[in-house]
Image (cartoon, rainbow, N blue to C red; front, side, top):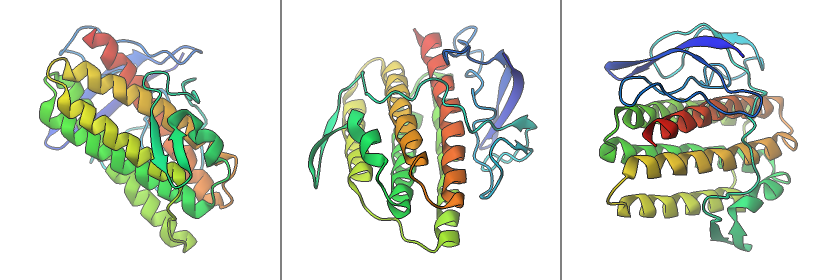
Amino acid sequence: MNRTTCVFMLGLASLTLAVCDFGDDDGSATSMAGSGTTAPTAEASGSGEMTSAGSTTGASTSESLGTGTSVDTELDTGSTTGAAESEDSETGATTQTSSGMVDIGDLPSLAVDLSDAQMLEVLNAFNRAEIDLSGLAVMRATSPDVTAFAQMVIGRHTTAQGLVDMTVTTLAITPEANDVATAWMDASAGTMVQLQSVETDFDATFMRSQISMHMDALAVIEAMTTGADAAELNTLLGQFRGAMSGHLAMANGILTGLE
């Protein structure tokens, strides 16, 4: 197992992740030692942060984009934390697209055949969904760990959107609407409605939804990686995979602390 010290700056306040163990081979994350006193579990794929476009997969990065602070750690973009399952076992959600009803668990098989332009639109959907849902959590969460996680997700996916936009400019292509992106946004909207209706135990409900969504997103990213043509897009997909694997490990650690 590896050890690292991760430091994140969230707005004017700082969230320091103590030195902690990464997940074992099965991708499990180390739980927090105590509620409200220890920050979320360190991210499993290095820092779990997006780096500037064109960076080499697995290369060391000393800049934490979107956080205003620096880290010195390895970004292992090849890891999926053993969590990229193809089925949303928690919700079994389906959504209506131009091709009919689509089960969220079927998205990886659809993602394999997407064009580069369509894959970029899927990444746009990932970012929009995470920013919107985490914005609700910032307003409603009562656990400091959950609030800090939501703030981190907003910052990281805002940075990630900048990288998507940069890749779009570099490749000179326009993101194209597709069933995978549409299904993802529809499922996100359904999750938003469910979270808005939660009267008690919002924190745990939000974290469970984050775990489910990150598992599904990782499966889609893995599928898109096999079909992407442009080298720049492959690099970006690797960065998303590494960062979202880290977020998944953190979410699992926080939920363990809440329960």
